[in-house]
Image 1 (cartoon, helix red, strand yellow):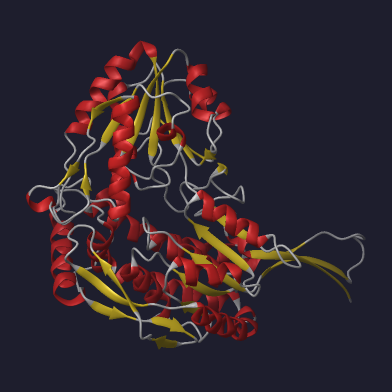
Image 2: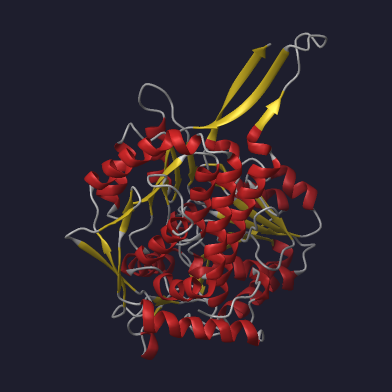
Length: 523
């Protein structure tokens, strides 16, 4: 195992030789010992194998087999629910202190394997070193944050006031209690963080869990499961089922025995899960995050170097495959040309390359469908607007076996154009001129979504008081619309980006996994 050290998202750089050397060793370990493994499901405390398998290939080199995984079906979902239901009474009755201890053990497991899991993620997702290690470290902190929140709130048992302050025999309590069996369905783009965080939140609050990861990231799904398995949760408390969305995912959605859902993914699927939660004899909670079409506004009072840097990083980090990616930027007419020149120059300088390489900024898109989608959108952009840079798939030399594409900036599209309105989940940025800040704000808010938004300029209060989004950034060169850290920045959306009005990694996440009971006791 690579040497372990304390790292954070901001310390990963080309000149951090100690960390880079540890990363190099982890890459060698993964390539020599991990690739091509068979990974199981996990139901009721046992590893489960099926006759049919699924294969995960690397988007960096499609000849590379990441792993062979089990092709589960609806029957495995039912077995997992049986186990989770049977385990729920004992787990929910387990003290919150014991649940916190096991949850922290899971965080420790992930932290110890952070370099190897990051190195594996490079290959299966196509992330850069910075993105992959940052995700794993964020995931560790998310788990620890939820354990800390459970502890700080003393298990969410609070004594209330009295109807008769003089009556020593009257006691009133507000108690938050788990729902039951909780389903977690996670996406490919953050296959560790967006898996382990909701799993940890559900478990530490006393729910039992059925987990399904993305079929594009089967190895990451197993590694996310393994950190909880190795932590020693009782049989049936945590269960992992792999399989296609149309069978395993659908069986989870269709089951009336699921008591709550966490889903991260597309708007269409997310809205369906949300509707499913409202069906049946009573409503069930559904924590849904459905992406964004995130705008940045650049004022004529902005530091344009900082603004161009922040927009470039937010638009093209992880090849634009972030729900928080900046996909639209509205620039005051007074500074439009100067900003455009800076942004295009920076974008042309982006290194697209193998994620193993230290200075790679953009790796690959996730699969052939995404790559074909990029090319189709570029055809639309050439027809209806102007491509300022990018627009091509890279196929020469080392790029020949992977899904490498160029970062693209487009101008001249109408605001009702599909590329402006639809979440593309690709490295494609729409650049537009605004005659005034009010014009920019109207365009920025004219969207179904409301996840993140960024602003550059001196009018911060105006921006924050008028933008319709849940996660805001002002004058942030590290990322105009991206990046949130547990306990530092809450991350959640408004409008069509989320279902609860509350965020993850923040003060109000855990109560979403519990319902409230009022208890009045008279001695």
